[in-house]
Image (cartoon, rainbow, N blue to C red; front, side, top):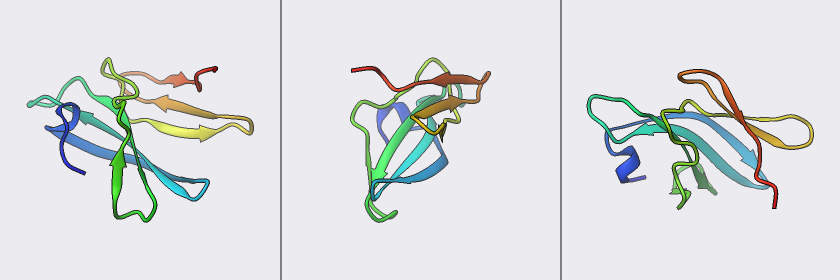
Amino acid sequence: MGPEKYDQKGLALNQVIKYKGKYYGYYHATAYDPWRDWTTNVAVSNDLIHWKKYPHNPIVSGNKSSGIVVFDGKQFRLYTMHPDVRVYFPAKN
């Protein structure tokens, strides 16, 4: 993974989950030095070595970071932890 504008100054991997044979890495990142205004992002891999960032990153902006995905038995929920705990549900199509 190379730096994009939104993650060029800092990046930390929060979680990797396996879903339908692919690995999804959820990470937080910042474009600023000193670090501030973190975003939540995702990348996908088939082998845990080569990763492709989601082209619409960041998936959550506005200084919401440290995303963790939880399956509640019906759907996945995305929780961000900073600066407070927030929950995001899948978009309805």
